[in-house]
Structures are given as structure tokens and as C-alpha cells.
Image (cartoon, rainbow, N blue to C red; front, side, top):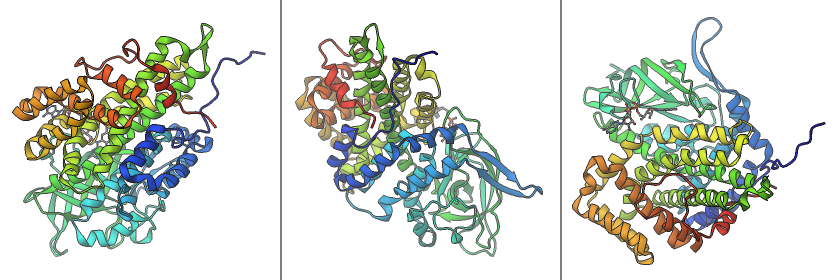
Amino acid sequence: MYAVFNQPPPLEPCDPFAGDAALREAVARENAGWAAPELAAFGALLGQADTIRLGFDANRNPPQLRAFDRYGRRIDEVEFHPAWHRLMAIGMAAGLHSAPWAAPRAGAHVARAAGCYMMAQIESGICCPIAMTYGAVPTLRQADALATEWLPRIFARDYDPRCRPAAEKTAVLIGMAMTENQGGSDLRTNTARAEPDPGAGPGIYRLHGHKWFMSAPMCDAFLVLAQARGGPSCFFVPRWTPDGRRNAIHLQRLKDKLGNRSNASSEVEFADAHAELVGEEGRGIPTIIAMSNYTRLDCAIGSAGLMRQAVAQAIHHAAHRTAFQKKLVDHGLMANVLADLALEQEAATVLALRLARAYDETDTAAAVWRRVITPAAKFWICKRAPALAAEAMEVLGGNGYVEESVLPRIFRELPVNSIWEGSGNIMCLDVLRALDRMADAAALLRDELAEGARADARLAGLVARLERRLADRAGADETQARAFTRELVLALQATLLLRHAPSVVAEAFCASRLSGEAAGVFGMLPPGTALRPIIERAALAAG
Ligand SMILES: Cc1cc2nc3c(=O)[nH]c(=O)nc-3n(C[C@H](O)[C@H](O)[C@H](O)COP(=O)(O)OP(=O)(O)OC[C@H]3O[C@@H](n4cnc5c(N)ncnc54)[C@H](O)[C@@H]3O)c2cc1C
């Protein structure tokens, strides 16, 4: 009989809240300390072995399109595995789709961000409809009648997966469709068109056209960009028409995706669909982009969460596996890799949660964070995450490449956060545009970074370079937009870590990230770095 030995125990049950010092500290710091008991209960639920299993099941059994019923009538439905429904119910019961809008208070967006960060670690696919529903609320509020009718069901914490008219449901979800075959970044090329519906009353249109990506097509309504006479406009398109018929939202096929496999992403044709104007005709891009800022925030939060799970798995494995007579974690070079991964992850967490706080606040500084730092953080965190996941996978050796470890799923999931809601280049160009348009932004960012610069000479050098760029607008050279955004994010992360993290973490981050060299392979922290305390801080224990 063959013996199994020198294999780590599974990292379950685990507690993604209690076991994540950086997260707990950020929640308290960013005004969401009041939510700690609820987040603790949520973390305990997510970390149970049964909940972890749901993520595997939902990915192994991806959704199926049911475009027609057995008689050939269009139904345009998508069937999901029960694990997906259970995960959705868990996420919505926690209010991840709407709690900050339903019960606004200081720290509400931060508390939700912490919940999403933990949810993503268990299964990221459901974060797509959850993020879109969350992001849709400010846009819906631009249309009073729609808000009155739909917000109460968006605020509900039920999950009601039935494909029925919204009036018959206890809870609803909202999706979004902008991207067309010929262009997703350049939305002005949209060709879907909307004509006023004669005799149907003001603001009611008929929608025709095709969208190349529309995720979560089982949502109850969608915000859709289409050309009206006045130019690109935003429309609310419900699954069911007001007179109780299925709206002409024809799902053509589901995408066969690299990752994000538990979630459905469709190609869709609107064939004379009922649509209601949101905002002004011709102002559709800013109207719908208001939603994108929230979903971009969620890309950063979700990637930080996935990074956290990858780092926790890597440290856990290295703490239990022996090679060459020592635990992997006790080998100097492995300790360097693990500590470096932990630094990257903690920097992502502090930045994502600080950014979430800007969504709770209304002053000018918060507006600058939302407008300038949201695309910057999305760019950099989502760019670093796949590299981190690949390295974490390697820590597990061959085990990491096998589906039963969660690493392949994390690795496949991560690139989408960089692509959707505005790909990397678009994010960096948006940073430059926002700096150009917001009169106070450069000065506010300079103040924000000044404290960090006083605390650390290395950071002072980087900040001086950034200040020159902010002052003379050299940052506006679009060929340098990535380099500029990277430096801006690194300076903010260093400032936050110097202010809030243990000194060993801040010191190692500054020593390894502020030299001006392009961030590359993990495991190159300089000699003398205090590796062990950094790893211990990031370790997550089973049980
Ligand atoms: C799994 C998945 C789900 C999705 N779900 C949805 C959804 O629900 N709703 C929806 O509307 N969309 C959705 N999308 C679409 C996604 O938002 C787009 O793919 C994305 O915005 C990029 O658009 P594109 O694919 O048309 O690429 P393009 O716009 O053609 O861009 C291609 C590349 O060129 C770069 N680029 C573009 N313009 C410039 C420029 N001026 N300078 C430098 N570089 C530039 C981009 O950064 C990108 O790297 C989804 C995508 C995926 C992968």
C-alpha cells in the first residue's frame, strides 16, 4: 500500500477575515470598524469546507444557454449549477450587491469592499453580477420612475433567480452592455440604435442591435449603450416588458472563456426591444461610465482578494512541505519569494480599501481618489495579480498546476479584471485625462504623498519625480502613461504602508519597489530584508 506523506493538509476550514491582519486593520482604519462582527461571521461562513467546495462545483459545471424551449419558442435563459445559486445567495445575503446604497453610513463602501475581497477568494464568478448591480444604482437614480420601481428590489438581500417580471420577484440584478463587435474601448463606434417608440410615452424607445459581450445575461435588466438621434445614449432594458412579455433580448451564444467559467458571458441581439432612456439623449457615455467607476473599483478589490488567497495558499504549502531536510518556508530563497508575494498583496489590500473609502466620502480629496486613483489602482493591481498568482502556483510545485488546488482557477480568473471595464492602456490614459480635467487633482496628490516622502528618502526621490511630472504635465505624454501610473500607484502604496503597516513591511516595500527599476520577478528582495515576520503576518492557518 502506498503511503502519502509530506503533503500539506488542506487549508480548510479557514477564516479569511480573522486570518487576514492587513484586511482587519484596513477595515478599522477606513471607518468600517462597526462592520467587523458581520464581516467576521461572513468570513467564517466563506471559509467552511462546504462553501469552498461550491466554488469548485460552480466552475466544473459552467452555465448552459437555453435559447429555446422544447417547442422552438425563444426563452433566452441560462441554466446554472446549484452551487452557483448557493454562492449568489451567500453574496446577496451579505449585501455585496447593494448594502452601501440601502443603508448608507460612513464606511459602508469599505465594509462592502471587504466582503467582496473575501467572496472573490472563494469564487470570483459571482462578483460580476454583484458588481454590476452595485454600480448600476447611481445611474438608475438619474431616472426617478425607474429608481422608485427597481431600487427596493435591488436593496433586498434575497436571491431570486427566477426568470419572471421584476414585479413578481423579491430581488433583482442589473447587468450592463456596452461592448460591440467592432469596439469596446472606443464606445463612440457603437452601432446599436434606439428610436422613440411612437405613442408609448416620453423616454420609451425601441432598441435594435448587437452586443459582443454582455455578462450575467440572467440579470433582470441591463443598462445598454445605443445610438439615439442625439448621439450615444444610455437605456434601461428589462428582461420583461411592462405588459408582461419576454423582452426581445436574444442570447445568441455564451463565450467559451479562459476563466470566470462559473459566470455566463453572452453575445446578444436586441431585436426591437423595449428600452427606457436613462439621463439625456447624447449623454449616454458619461451616464453609463458612472457605473464603470464602481465596477473598476471592484476589479481592484477582486484582484486583491484573489491575490490574498494565492499568497495564503503558497505560505500554507511552504510551511508544511519539506524538501532537502527543511520546510520550504525555511529555505532562504523560498522565504524571499514568499515575503515578496506577501508585500505585493498587502500593498494591493491597503490601496484597494483606502480607495473604497473615497466612495464613502464627499469632499474634493475623495473625488480625486475616485476619479484619478480608481483607474490607476485597477491598472496596477490587476496587472500585478496574474504574475503573483503564477509565482504562488510555483510555490506549490506540481500540486499548484493541478485543478484540485485552487491556484489554476485563480490564475485563469485574474486577467479578466485587467481587460474588462477598461483595459490597461485605457486605464492609464484615463488617469492622464482625469489629471488634466480636475483642477485640484495634482495639488491634492502632492499633499497626499508629501507625508510619505518626509518619512522615507527613497520615496522622496520617487515623489520628486512624480511632482515634476504633475507640475509640468510631462505625465500627459501618452507613451509614458503606464510608467507614470505605475509610479503614482507605487508612491501611494508606499505612503500607505509607511503610515499604517508594520515597519518591516513598509521598509521591505520601499527597499524593493522604489528604485525605479521595472517590477519584475518575485523573490528579489534585497539582502537583510526581515523575511520571516513578513511571512508570518501573511500566513493563514487552517481551523
Ligand atoms: C469575460 C468578459 C466579460 C465581459 N463582459 C462585458 C459586459 O458585461 N458588458 C460589456 O459591455 N462588456 C463586457 N466585456 C467587454 C470588455 O469590457 C471589453 O472587451 C474591453 O472593454 C475591451 O474592449 P475590446 O475587447 O473591444 O478591445 P479594444 O477596444 O479593441 O482594445 C484592444 C486593446 O487595445 C487597447 N487600446 C484601445 N484603445 C487604445 C488607445 N487609444 N491607446 C492605446 N491602447 C488602446 C486596449 O487597452 C486593449 O488592450 C467583457 C469582456 C470579457 C473578456
